[in-house]
Image (cartoon, rainbow, N blue to C red; front, side):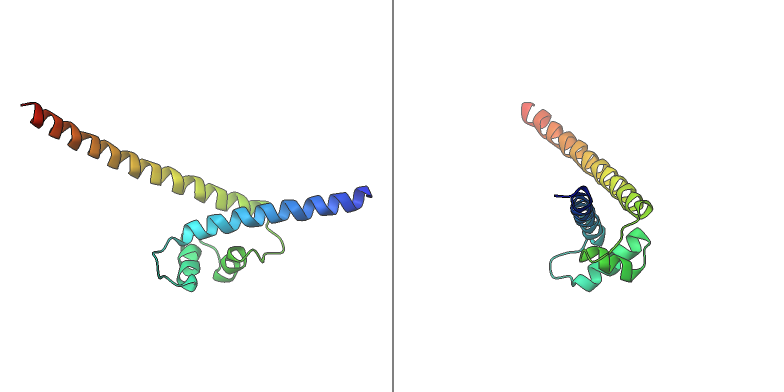
Length: 110
């Protein structure tokens, strides 16, 4: 196999991996509940990520021919912040539950 052909295959595989990663982030940004339409989820993602509706649609369906590094970095940064905020909310909820359990345990001991 020629080096050029190998390089082209590697690029296509790398693009597919990035396209899949970006689609996952876009779907995460879409949020939603059971029964929500894909159109609504794409609209939600467009707002959350501050990107054009058409661009979000192409990323959602992995149809983007090119994904600039700056765009991928923007989506990854949003995802990191989203996960950090979610972790903070879950940690706060866990602390609240642990406090309630401690109250119940102290009440049972009395």
